[in-house]
Image 1 (cartoon, rainbow, N blue to C red):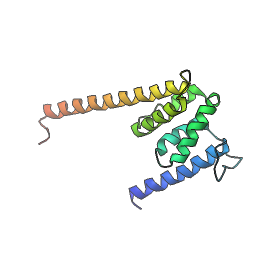
Image 2 (spheres, one colour):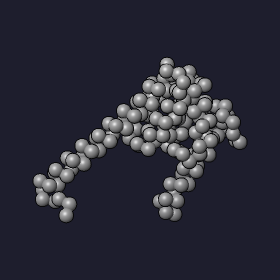
Image 3 (cartoon, rainbow, N blue to C red):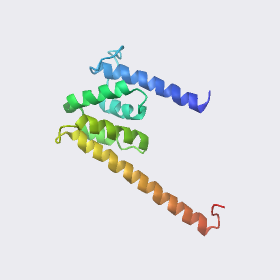
Image 4 (cartoon, rainbow, N blue to C red):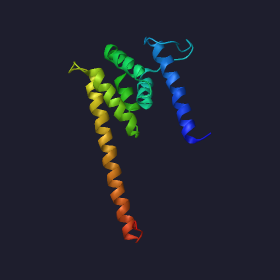
Length: 146
């Protein structure tokens, strides 16, 4: 099995898991997670970002759910979960939070959108800084790109 096939299989499994878990929280879907399985809405938000645009119907349903059920999300826990270094997931979540908070300036989703954007910027600045530092070190050792 190639790495690419493994990654696709993992995303398919995560998508199925996401649908079952979100359906258990009230999103309309085919299957629900078993009752003995605990549902973790903050982790499901992160999973939705990880899945990216793999299933836009799920993403649209999650956005509606977040806009309606904002009070059910533990905000400080979500912020802790969002402390990741995966830029594609943060970009997608920034879009999800923007859509969930649209039309309500007081919505905490706008704060989370800004948090993701700031985190992306910090990661990108850090990478740029590290690339420059690495290039400088390589140059000082006479190992420049040729």
